[in-house]
Length: 187
Image 1 (tube, rainbow, N blue to C red):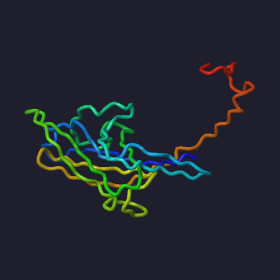
Image 2 (cartoon, rainbow, N blue to C red; image 1 turned 135 degrees about the vertical axis):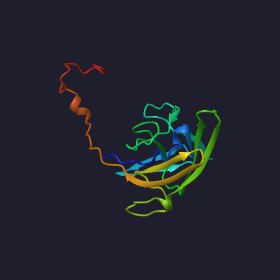
Image 3 (cartoon, helix red, strand yellow; image 1 turned 90 degrees about the vertical axis):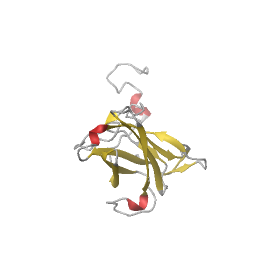
Image 4 (cartoon, rainbow, N blue to C red; image 1 turned 90 degrees about the horizontal axis):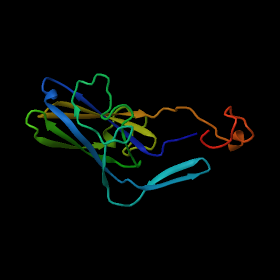
């Protein structure tokens, strides 16, 4: 069974009011450790972050492309910034996550930042409230953008769901059990 060893953050921007369409999002960044060790032993697993200084991690889409400029919309479907499955994953056990959201006014092209901290103890809808972000959990961070003068942040916990399992046995591939008629790789 595959179990997630990291913590996932989905960032969902929603325009609210009548001025949100005057700005566009340039980037979303978090500060976190980006290296560690994965330990697996007899069905147990854990990820231990290295004791190094946090670095800036930039939101990327599912194809690993840096977030492109995005218009702020009402986003009634709650699509994450960067599109479906775009997220930032960090080591578990952190009690807070520093975030920087970079904007630009469409008309004047003036840029600005909004910095905030997501705190594990303030996450709503947790089945087991915790003061640390948990491995295998996905957190939805809602960013309500009213315009250049007001931004409101809220969050909920969205557990990852079991997508099924697969059993790979190399012996099943030897002896012509596949329909390709060959055992050569790539055929």
